[in-house]
Length: 263
Ligand code: IP8
Image 1 (cartoon, rainbow, N blue to C red):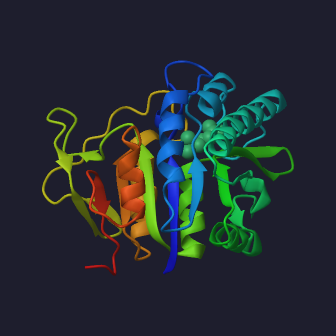
Image 2 (spheres, rainbow, N blue to C red; image 1 turned 90 degrees about the horizontal axis):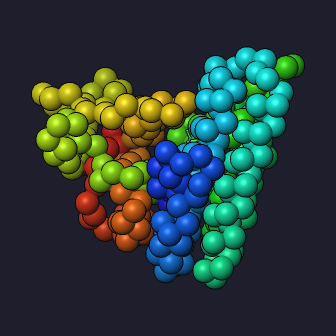
């Protein structure tokens, strides 16, 4: 495993999901302050769409399934994600970090990895520049496009780089036992490739305006990564110290999905 952290900043943290095209600038600033202090391990950032990409994806009825979607929709979804990426990159610059925003089309083709491009992400991070990529609208073939979620990007990047820390930050503390009690599940072990907590079902809130499937999809991607042997942490990004402490390998409030090979 490579000594590098792969961190997903969920759209629920960096935007107000119920307010179209509104970034949560306070949360972004707080995260930047925390990340600026993370010197022990290089990291790569992936961010989601929140009320930017998902807002337009719903408006233009666009999904993860490749299809010849409305060209205007393709353009505005991509533009909104570049705009959100700019907000994050600029906030990181202001806090003394050296971010490098890049769309997934620079290291994937038709949602498949371009090996050299993904290797470059790790090399950049190891040498002091922080790659900041994002879920996006990507070209598949001919007139077909698809939404490529940041969670899928996490699996794709983790699959090749094998980072020592994989962290998903959302606006909740982790995975709840059920939505009623909101009791946090501290650890999940994989069973037959999917995430289970033992006897009880895991509670997920509704996906709402999230065209890529909300928490359920996130856990599926996290389980996929854990099945490759890496531990995955789900933490609350509105408590940014948890993100950086998780990256440092400290024990934090959140849900750990145990990598299949770890003990
Ligand atoms: O929020 C989706 O990324 P996610 C990005 O990580 C778009 O699912 C374009 C909706």
